[in-house]
Length: 254
Ligand code: SAH
Image 1 (spheres, rainbow, N blue to C red):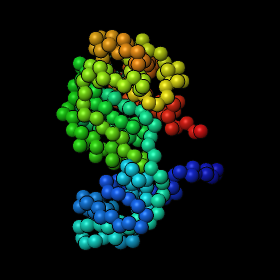
Image 2 (tube, rainbow, N blue to C red; image 1 turned 135 degrees about the vertical axis):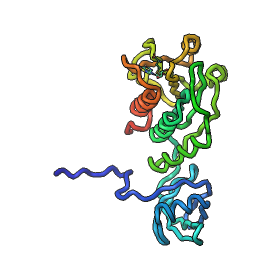
Image 3 (cartoon, helix red, strand yellow; image 1 turned 120 degrees about the vertical axis):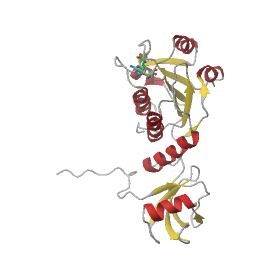
Image 4 (tube, helix red, strand yellow; image 1 turned 30 degrees about the vertical axis):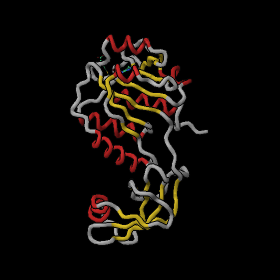
């Protein structure tokens, strides 16, 4: 049987990895909040002396040792820095929110696939449950912990498509997934789509004619086709972000 050599950035054992918002530096001791302490002690059953990884979206990632302060609170002694802080490439994922579980899926996958920002966009045919940004934030944290990101995607407040386009920063190219087939194929378009860029996916009902006309009229926007089949919005989100990372993002090795 062939032995595969592991890539250097993938650790051999997967240690528990958590996000905290406190400052982190080698040799300091940080106290976790009640919820995280409960998770480590009661859910994960960690004990005094156990090691874990911690990151805070600014200082990098650190190896630390757990010391319970009391039954409800945990201290982490920071031993060493395991990774420097780095941001994912500057790629925004903008999409019309969907029903709750489908939106959850997009937020989780956008984080795993390395979106720098997630933007809920309200379009004519958007039918969504109430948008709860705190819930999205919790989901991005969980997905970043699991996927070994050292940064978190930023999440915008929902914005109407017309407003978003009105205030667009011209340095950023906008690629909208156009199910009507007028766009170029994604490989051609992404042969030159460097960051900063943004991807836009419509709702289940698609973009309205007026929205498509408006998008087509913008000099900074470019229509993209994802082939002959009509994809669900969440599939289009994952497919377009994957293609971008593969061609213009950090899936490409130097
Ligand atoms: N109701 C529409 C489909 C909308 S699919 C219809 O029946 O025609 C939801 C969104 O996914 C679309 O607005 C588009 O942004 C994206 N999408 C789905 N399939 C696509 C494709 N083949 N090419 C480009 N974008 C696609």
